[in-house]
Image 1: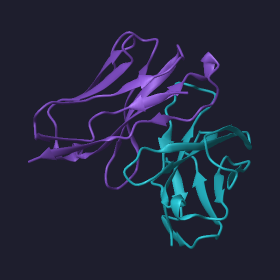
Image 2 (image 1 turned 60 degrees about the horizontal axis):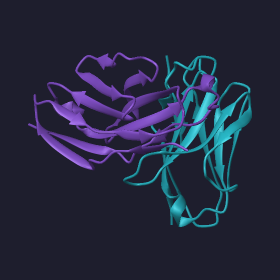
Image 3 (image 1 turned 135 degrees about the vertical axis):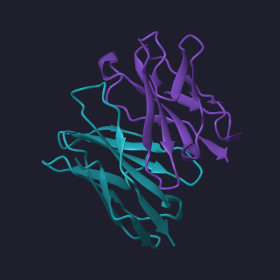
Length: 114
Length: 119
């Protein structure tokens, strides 16, 4: 049973570019959340997708957008990249229908902005 | 808004010793869940233990146990018989219960405690 998978593992971009990160949830999960983890910090909630819609959003600008597909997989898009966007981006999945389920995390995508 | 505070940036103990990591939180929610996650250098966030706020009994998972004090908004993690493989960043996290009207919020994390187990 595959857990949460994320791609790519590592990505290098330059300022002003756009990036797309991908996430496949754990089997049986229908909800995907994205987090940004800066070096030496705890993860910060970006947004959550359920039923192909953004349900909740953290304190992140509109440059951060996402999408969820019918198979529950998700993408995180970041436009106009800034140096401060350099971070580990974590995807987590859960089953929204069961609030007792914890969020399961992928290995993350390390994004470096030059 | 919720906040989670971990006041110990780093801790170091000898193998086989017992160690306690501290966590306090602030919320106006009455129903919520608290978690401890472990993040080794491999960077995957691994769930260690979970506590539901409405349960009085402290959660236990093998060598890991919590001391949950709801009134004090405190949620510490005790690791017994520590092992070298316990070396990692440990994060305390909070999420409101979806049934409390808190919605589908994401987890709120503390800044983490770097735990080092010395041989």
